[in-house]
Image (cartoon, each protein chain N blue to C red):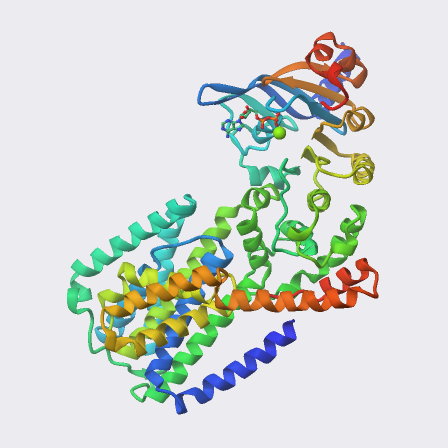
Length: 266
Length: 335
Ligand SMILES: Nc1ncnc2c1ncn2[C@@H]1O[C@H](COP(=O)(O)OP(=O)(O)O)[C@@H](O)[C@H]1O
Ligand SMILES: [Mg+2]
């Protein structure tokens, strides 16, 4: 007894501490169509957790639910142990959970540098200052340039974001997301539409930034998933088909039958 | 580019200071009032991406409050104007709070509905004078000692009001707040995902826009010594949309150009009576078809295009990447 309690307590403490994002029986119906069906997911802190599955499996909807862009029909969402089922999207971002979007989401009429700066200025608390000149923001320029360099966009800093090629827009989104130094990132197909060179650059970047962070990533490129992720969840028709490491999942007969056998493009 | 803005501003202010000695001052004051109204409206439409179809409510309610406080309560002009602006701000806060929950055409419809409520209130309420409006409002003495009955003195006061309003709106557009506002306009979900509570920004913008629309309405009362139903009618809401789109929404100078054009046409076409509306309508349709970005918007686009052309000419002997970098280094800040 004298030795059992603290040990048990620690074990429990670590267990709750370890989970960054958890969903319990998460369900979303669109007018009778169930896009996400009873999904219970646990994402361990500090890991890269990939979500894969065919188009229309409900991956993006799941992201929308977790980040509160959609309200679930039923089920619960926990972030670092607290219930966020009723939270607001913007407040989640303020608590370190930042998502990106499947379709490229830059601010096209702002310059590339300004895109990143808009993210940098948010925690500074000056965003409501309509009486201050824009020059107030220039002290964020150095940090913004660092982030742009990390994603290979330093040369495009002064151009409009809308004029970037598709793959470079995706890179800009990652820089913008990183500007907030989020604890938890949800990346929806971050490499879709990128050339192979950019894919390896961004894959390496994700690997680098994953230290001390939790990353949930929807991704189609199997090689990237295999290389990067600690855990993989396979979704199909809104339900979890399989869950585990790449080795476990890729050996799962249901997964093989569902689509893995059809080629490496999931 | 900031330096170019400054040079342009100095030239414009000098021109505006000389103007009343060359042109009819009441006409100029009308242009300034509507230019301010359109600038305030443009903050919401051009930078906030929100099309209000009921901005007459703020222009008009401020004009009634200014007229009433000056005529009945004996307020000095500056206090009357502040009272009008406060009324517009308050109305903007309430209506804006309710309207920003809607987007697109629904937002336009909700704002129109609120403006119609204000219109019927103005028609029925005892203090607004119904069809007659509030007439013969004394211009009074600014700060208690500058007699505004003289048109030239009044012109300089109205000019000061315009410049204050224009500067505040310009500053807002190019401020940390303005950056976020543009980001919300461009991609609201993304702005939310960065942690911005976008409704707060939209509401603040709505209130700022209403307040300066109110300033314009209040100034108009001083010029014409009148607050009337025409200021709260839906046609007034439509006119400010027209001015802004003609001049170029989302450009700083567009609304000024648009307002000047519309007021000039109204003045010179006045002999044609009811045809004015039709002629304005035709001009509007032509403009929308020919230059969709508005006059200033189109001019800026041509200017940017010319710059790109120049860059292209240089391209023959310089590596491509260098040129794009060079061209990009001097971004044209929209005026
Ligand atoms: N807002 C919505 N309204 C109705 N149906 C939707 C909505 N969003 C997604 N769906 C449907 O839900 C299913 C899952 O979509 P999605 O989550 O985007 O899939 P994935 O990201 O896995 O490709 C699709 O059949 C899609 O048509
Ligand atoms: Mg998707």
